Amino acid sequence: MKLIAVDMDGTLLNHWKEISEENIQAIKKAQSMGIEVVIATGRAYFDAKKICEKAGLNLHIISDNGALIHTKDGEQISSITMEKKDVQRIITELEEQNFYYEIFAERGIYSTYNRKNALEEEAKDCTDNLKFEMIQTAIAIQFGQNGHKLLENNEAILDAEEKFYSVFALTFDEERLRDGMKHFAQMEHLSMISSANNNFELANKLTSKGNALEKLSRMLNISLDHTVAIGDSYNDISMFEKANLSVAMGNAHNDIKALCDTVTLTNDENGVAYIVNQIINKDILHQIQFSNISLA
Image (tube, rainbow, N blue to C red):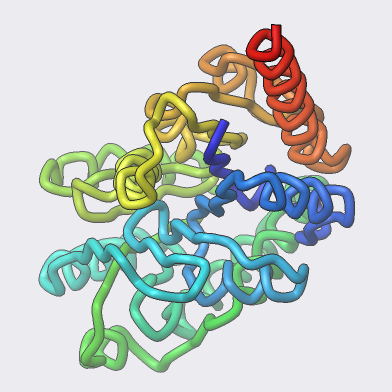
């Protein structure tokens, strides 16, 4: 294998949102053997980059669910944007339906104080202790993203002279989520992506991890026949379909596991390191066998 694409949340990151030392060493070992390792995440580029830097990793990054591609040198080689009028319509209607939302843009991840308050109200109204903890965790994750900015109103977001990549919607109300997804599915010129059972994201129709993986592989002159994709959720399906080998995390949904060629350990069990080391060892074995055949 010549390229390994790795999702972040639920895959490379453990539940503390950190990259374990085992995963770091496995990635560095793969790189030392000439294998390109690529982050493929729904996170914003500057957020993913910061996490990688903290772990001492220098990787190509597919971010914003495929809207952006950056080389490990930080060069932006692909950008797929949304029309401002679409962003305006989406956030207006999300506000009417009382969703929390974020706009992923060129210089930040934007939301409003009003939407933050709406999400916190969901937590206050929750009587289920387990669900309450889930909401509190989600709030901490969303507001802890690098580049996250709260503004006074929608106009402050839309007046910014920058590129828009996607709109992320979050709610823990199952009926609201279902109705919202049904409503926005009517915007057929956009794609709808989900990374968990409490959210969806709207982006340009061409935006997907799979399309970005294909584009980056072509730029690196690597055939998709020599690629691996590792992930845990629905927004990873497009790259599972493009890669030669698809790997589901042990913590992935059963329907995601069923789509993949193999399943590794969970994200808290260093599942990325486990499968990367398996791939490396098989490649080494293949090289030894090929060398022996050639010498004979």
